[in-house]
Image 1 (tube, rainbow, N blue to C red):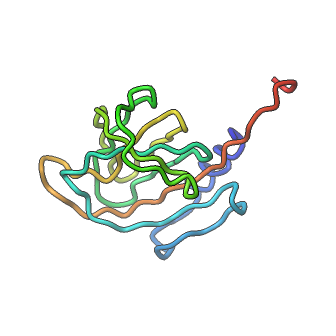
Image 2: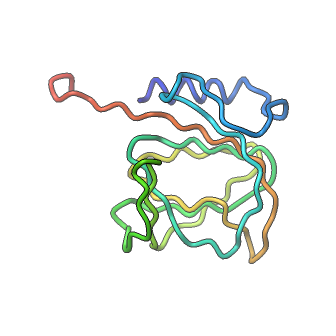
Length: 143
């Protein structure tokens, strides 16, 4: 999937997302797609998520949020599983990282992440683009 990650990052660098409406858009069918989102952060959010089939590239366009991150090995308690949507939710301790306007984060399937957390007990508005990049399994004889 690294070629797809490069394709998504190149598109991210060259695109003015202020001219793109909220919604879901495909770059390469279900191999690479992105969602332009607008939401309010939640300072009390604690549930992390993980994916198996997709790498997330999350880029803040306006505003800022905390994204808690941790290795999947840190997961303690499965809260909910939605394999049909490629998402599993966990309660676990994460390390807070700030995503601010103009910055991005690449999150692989082994990265738990808790996006959309407000800072200092306050909520704030964000506009973000999230790319979903399909992971390709490597055949053992090709390694």
